[in-house]
Image 1 (cartoon, rainbow, N blue to C red):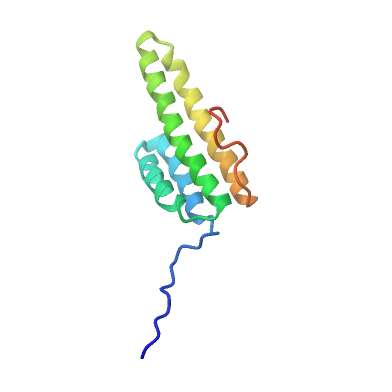
Image 2 (image 1 turned 180 degrees about the vertical axis):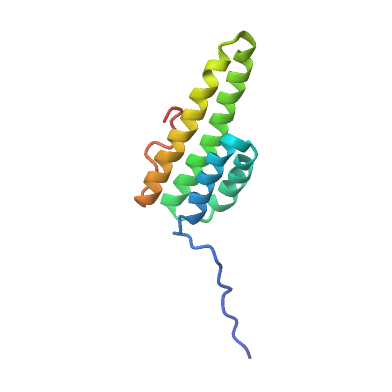
Length: 120
């Protein structure tokens, strides 16, 4: 009789590499726009099997995507009256600050502070 060994996975539940990649994809999306969708899918896929502190980063990243998309939609609608053109740089800055803050907490191996807030 043969014994079966569990299949080793390459994903470490306590490895922050994927969360780092998602932050990078979000920052690249400021120039391309498309990579944020890839990051969103990755955050949904890896979020369920991560340790709690990394899962909090995935939640933070998912919320960053959806809230950022909402801000872009609002800025686009308001650009019809000219105000939105002033809001686009603020939305970009908001995304940069959120990614930088999340990355900082990721490097400190801690969950992002207040992942559910809409500001920073």
